[in-house]
Image (cartoon, rainbow, N blue to C red; front, side, top):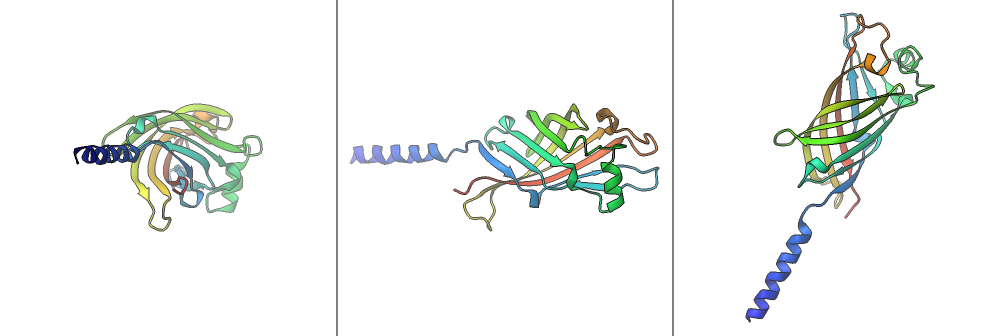
Length: 194
């Protein structure tokens, strides 16, 4: 009887060991990802643009978020300011020069905790052929299973950052059109179905 109890206890411990969260690789979901950036236009308005159709991966370990990594690519052909002529203007060689530099990329280099459910994600942002370090203030919204996607791990995050566009060689009309760009990101990422 005693041997049976030890065997049962060993089985429970083995099961508990497999239940410990391990790093999960997620694919960023373009249908639930928005990368909005805004700027001030001559003091009169604050236009906003969205970088649609993200392609990227996230590796996230709930037990140790500092080991997380993220890589994302955005095609400037998918830039949407909600005003077609402004899309053309920003894609021109005066700004992004999308014909020469068709993508914007981000690759994390460091993740630090910043309080409960908060992270500081530093990475290399490449815009207009220029790569600079940028730090995102990230909120972990939820990590779990979407009830509409049974068995599929899902992770959701929001992030904000502020940068200077002139640092990336996109300085037309500064200071009348603000150099400071405010970025707001919301994203969901899906792992492989279990």
